[in-house]
Image (cartoon, rainbow, N blue to C red; front, top):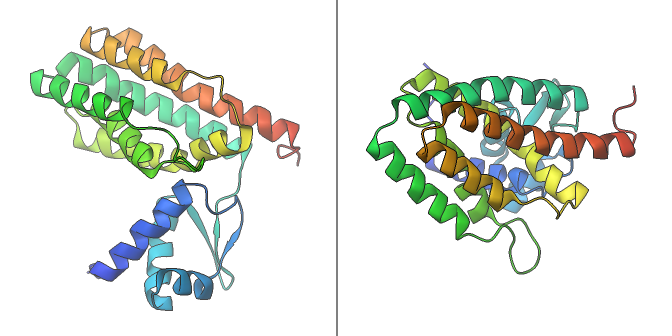
Length: 226
């Protein structure tokens, strides 16, 4: 039976995961256990356990005999991840509209209210971790009425894997022209209007746009070359 993570292990996991999702480690950069142990005041075994769990989520890559590194910016992987995520997440959103009840609608409105009221960046220009959490909660609420625990889990896992790419899309491309808040408003309106097909279409476009921006950056930077 797998060992249950300790409280300290969970703390290090949460802090390291937050740092990864905030873009504080560059794509493909090596994650040195000793350095991380000093940063989080933790033993090497605790740091290794946290990195192993992050590798299971697709945020970190484990290299036999060579430690761990942040996942690289891979256009091929991003395109595949996006297509699969759109398939599952739009299915879950469509089912939520069809099967969701008043409790689902109420929770969705509350999640959107929190998201709309949370700044995307901190005063010093850093990615706001509270916005990351609110954004994640809104997208989880959007599909929470689908009626399938397994579908929700798979869609959430793919969204978590894509979150790092989303952060890079914001940090590397510096695209400030996109109206993210407007897109979220539209998703909420379509969900509350019980427009299942409209919501699925808008959600797919919402997800795809982030990928397209980052793929254009990768092409310009020569990251898509063999």
